[in-house]
Length: 466
Image 1 (cartoon, rainbow, N blue to C red):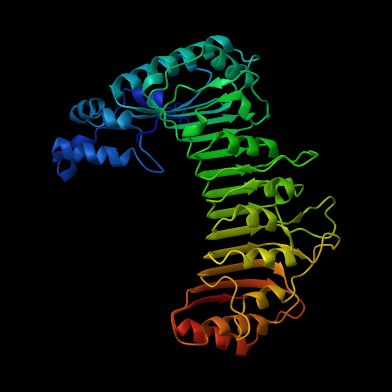
Image 2: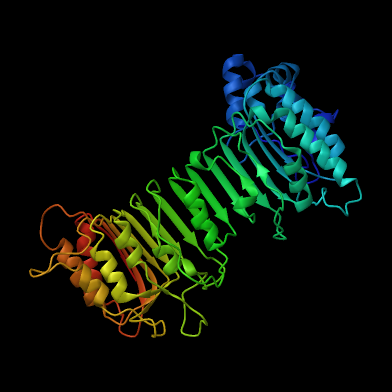
């Protein structure tokens, strides 16, 4: 997909690129270069490759090489399907180029992104912001039936309200939607209506109440909520009955009282919950445990920005055992970061997850009960995963284990015993990779330990221990 960024970098804008008379004369300098003599259909493929990817070339550039390239590029509709509009003060000229760009797309679907980083649409702008927003709305309305992907980012609340009032429709081919509010955290007071997007499957909503965005919820397969209340996560799961993947990040904690009745969402396969900015994260406890997710396969929990310490006020302990037990799900991937984990409850959780293939534990602290301050991890967890004659292993199908950033109160011999129990006897062993980076007063990796790890590497296992 081609990408158009009005207002480029280093003082060179796309408008200047389109209007400059000092066009490149590369054809005269490169007649011997084979690319100049390529068949048109092959050259279009080269153009398409150049306008795609992470660092796309503006297709306007091809029009400055020679007449043949200009004619070929300007008549190749697929080069113009991606339009990235970054509003600037000279938006009148931008909208002229916008119209020309859209005309070159023909009848093909369009991917469009609109951003207002320079606050052109704000009320205190030197230009008339309502007029700028009205032009923007008219342009979007004129192509809404052909927009397959739409991103609205950093638009002020007044603009979102005007777009909501405009009742733009239909969204006949819209499949992906991103509505990303501005950095001031202002939330639209009128619902943005995308109910006519009968093909919509993916949505990203940031800093907006989900009640203020009307979506065909039952069609959604992928949903990301950024800056969201715990109650909104539950509301999204209740509405999105066929949702497969939910990523909720920047969760804003509230002191919500009471426990809601159990909610079942059977379709969800992947759930990510991330507090990111603080540790007051209610979704580690009761609210998560009131949701039944029998189809869940991947669970990712990021409880804060760093490993918890004993001085964290109001720190909640992670206890997901009830939710996992009552959901009856067959998790294959579990990742927990920056949490204060109740060790006994977590061991019980692993005991009911024989299906687990991948376990990631990063920068966590550990507690024996709710009253304990977060501290180091004892040997109980590794013992629970160690195979003995009397006790079969928890996580019998585990393929990879990553354990980083925690303080432990056991010596490397405990890890060696765990690996020996898994890899000591010949035969098929699901566990193939172990990464263990820790610290502690008695955690001291010696030469005999390194020799054991090297022996297992020679046998084809991946072992990294620090």
